[in-house]
Image 1 (spheres, one colour):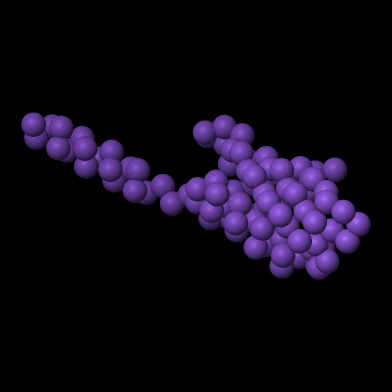
Image 2 (tube, helix red, strand yellow; image 1 turned 120 degrees about the vertical axis):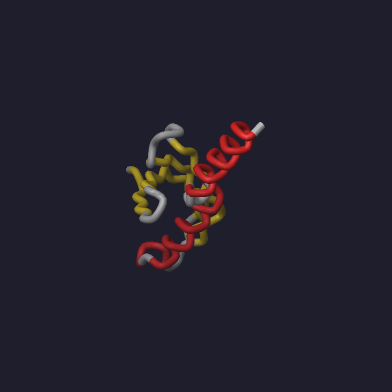
Length: 92
C-alpha cells in the first residue's frame, strides 16, 4: 500500500509541474497578441482553432477566421509555444 501511495504522489507531482497552457487558452493568448500587432488594426478575429502537431511537439497549426472590410477570410497560422514563450506567423 505504501508503494502505491508513493507512486500516486510521484505521478501527481510530475503532472502538476506541467505549466503549459491548454490549446484553448493558447488560442486566446495568440488572438490577444494578434490584436496588439499593427496588422490587425481594421480586422476583427472571429475564431482561431489550434491543433498541436503531436504530443511531444511545441508546434501548433491553426485556422484563423477574420472579418475584414472586404469580407470574411480564412488563414493558416503556425504557432510555436514552449510552455513560456509563444510566437505566431500567418502562413501564406
